[in-house]
Length: 395
Image (cartoon, rainbow, N blue to C red; front, side):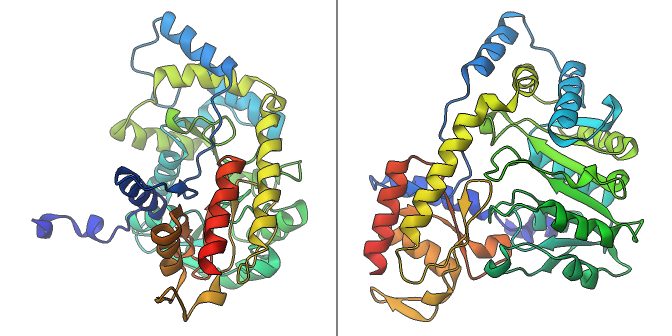
């Protein structure tokens, strides 16, 4: 019956991060000891003060449909957070709360992208950007970066990629999958290019802002020249270890926010009521409350880099944020290991899963065919064992 499916869904790629996680679960169901370093899911428990807020919301009988764009109290907490952490000023009518940051991105694509519009994506980019854009008829335009410049796009590269069809630029900082963080000078280069193009909009995905080892996260929307054309996307999945609670949000010019609200009203309506009440408490607290997680992630980063750098053929940069390493493993392309030829990053990722029982994600999913993504959002014991298996297998 496959022929009855829409062309849209036939052409849609499966999320490689979720596909690898599903393959790992399948192997575990067969009794195999798979170490999962594919998903970007913190292994911490949710902080107790957030749990208490959720319990209180249940006791206070929050159980009704929520406003499509979020509770007023949550929008006020988001406004306060944007001002406190990002030097961004929004009003309530410029905030939309969604069922995860992924839905927020889908909303944005729905209201701004027409068929044939081009969207610039610095590579590597988060796995779902490209296919969300394609679903709306947009054309992803990839800007290649390299490990030598920490996988960051330059202003010159951006300028050379713009043409009359360019509608948007999407990027994340800190970046998933590379962990790269754009500093003030680098963001200013991008702003200096875009300020001359009044019809180009920016999606700034800042879901990892607090997992930043340099400190002083800077939002591109804080630059006056671009703030009226910037949509800032954020959420609580990563910094607060609330992946399953599914709360994301945007700050955007009112006309964009209203359009996103309109789309969401026809798709899911408002996000979960209990989760929203818990997030009010999460965002109103000082980010210092979650500093212990960031410290642990940094320690894990240092551990996994030390271990990976001891494997011939793994070339790593030092990520400044998020909880991924993105090693270049092209050294192995064309080689045979245990009788299996490694032609590309996808081959390597599957080889490691099937033979070392370590789940990673191919860099092809992120627009870079020379790398694989390894998450260190796992315990140090699991990280150490996983890299030990990889090293033994490749040796």
